[in-house]
Length: 590
Image 1 (tube, rainbow, N blue to C red):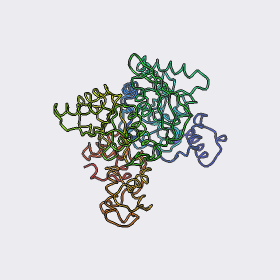
Image 2 (image 1 turned 120 degrees about the vertical axis):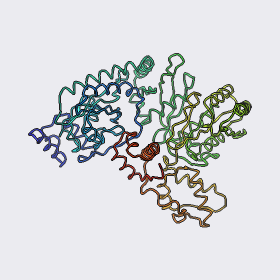
Image 3 (image 1 turned 45 degrees about the horizontal axis):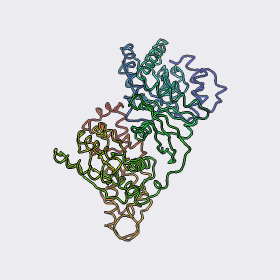
Image 4 (image 1 turned 180 degrees about the vertical axis):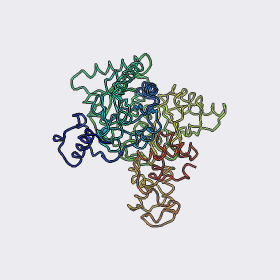
């Protein structure tokens, strides 16, 4: 039943959606009207819920560690009631959901209010999670105050969570129930729970974050200072620094800072931004004893990419001719480790070009020295391992670079011994390990015990923008003297493939096509019959990641879709829809 208040809200919302001026709309509060305006201006779908999804939410973050038990406690307090307690991160992405009613659970699944999905206001409109983050304060959204029709059966109370050290909003705690069950006591319950979460954030922060915050505040007080504070859980920047560095990934940047500093208290390193430009970061370590708890980074102005990374000079990028930021960053990091004689592990799927990337760095920095390549021996005995370590050590001592391929076959003890031996002579040669990981598999945990820096080479499906340059480079390397090109139709077709074998698979395909024709242009008609038609549309890098997560979950669940859906935190209906959307065939997971 719609009462007078609901009827007024429905009428106000309809006037907005049909072009009415926001200033002339009466009824909703100023906060709700402001949220409606943002939702309308942002093009949010008012009839349905359309939002983004990520497979791996970070439940190891300081926010999750501080809040998960609190969310469980709230769920216990309302056990038996149709109430759901929900934790979301600073982007509005749902991390945890705890509900005491199966009917409410199923209804929340149907509107994608589930772990992994974003409830940011710019994606789903006015709601307790996204609007609390957008408005920087507690938000109660009741029934028809929601912008999306699909959410008008609910009432939600969201309160943002503030980090006690950085004073930035790091997430939001929300309780959601049926609109007919709204109770003002729920808002008080959320506020009390948020106070507990913030107290636990302070406890988890400890001395290290206090030290980093003090250093940051001291450095940022100077007028016009561009400074960034970063650790595994902190990412703060002054407005001046934010204008220089733009949008960069916290995790990737912190890994780069750790690699650059090592045991030093100061260093400089280049940061590649999403648009391909670079800035130099002057780093200052913040340590507690010997422990690196964080760093201050002072960026300079942006520059174009270094020419060595923009063109295939002296064999640089001979197998993949990359130009995407992720591949450029991998090349830059390997090149830096090579120049500084730092051991490095280059990690990636089969065929991505790990050894080729190492070879390219060697050609730039050590072209006059012999490259010694050793293959790690599977199930190596003590004598085999001793010989390997002795050979590598001897080569490094005389200044030779050593590439140990298939490092994933070495045990943690073997890796530690090998890296320990090489570190005693780092001023001479150089050690690089190549580590093979299969699609979706985690990086081998043994590397964590060695302290050796790692560089991840992205798979071909994550850098399809590079495909025209890669194809041209591979065709130029084929035997024979004729010049060969590909048609636009064939290039489009190649960009719809999964490429599980990466660049090696692409190279083998081109070689096979060249053997079958003597023409100077390859077309779709030259593809082998086994290639079929590929995917109907070209997937984005994010969609490839989501597709890979679903395939891996289906493999682990032996093809049982309901089990796979549960492991991903999505509904059974969602996984069926995504299997169809991403054209996942049974032979990929069974």
